[in-house]
Length: 272
Ligand code: SF4
Image 1 (cartoon, rainbow, N blue to C red):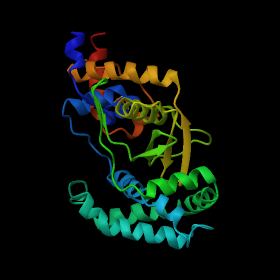
Image 2: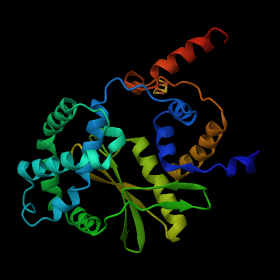
Image 3: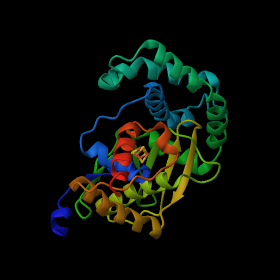
Image 4: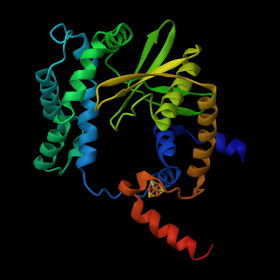
């Protein structure tokens, strides 16, 4: 049974869904289509992700080195809006221009934070150097760990002091300090894949919070590595058909599977 499990290939994206909610992963693995309440938040997510891919260029642009301006950000947003239908034809199919307009307005409301944080990080040696290295890379690397039987594609893998450091983009809110636990575990998963491929220990990585323009450095700890290994074996069980228990959380309110999840929970509660 264990060997059979070992053969099930999993992706870091599946691990990431598991870290947010195991039940959600079960539904997406069984081919259930998520029911979106509104495409607005998804469109915002796509636009922010594309914008974040330009932040390292902004930090290295001599015209914005001293101070990233609202005009710089407006230029980035305009370019993303021009390209988004070409980059995401399936996701953008049928999306009304008003929705894209509303998502853009919501994102403009973050410009103050983005501008402030990017400007101050342009003056930070570590982040400036990281941005310089990122701006010389133009591809998302495909990682395939034979040992873990897991694949994944981080935003970038940057060589620093002989190690390959993963960088991940997140479009949700940023915590006041550090990073969210699920984001740290997501990054640790990439670090473990990078180690297997490059045979060098990864001691830290970076999460780029797109909405606020903040790069956060994250240490990779043994406790997180252990949790990732546990998650890998649990994800394999879920992919084999084991339905995990429902765990109520704040995510349930905006979850695209909530209708299905609530029906299943109340159906189960008649028998248990
Ligand atoms: S409703 Fe809650 S428990 Fe159910 S899948 Fe969504 S986030 Fe998970």
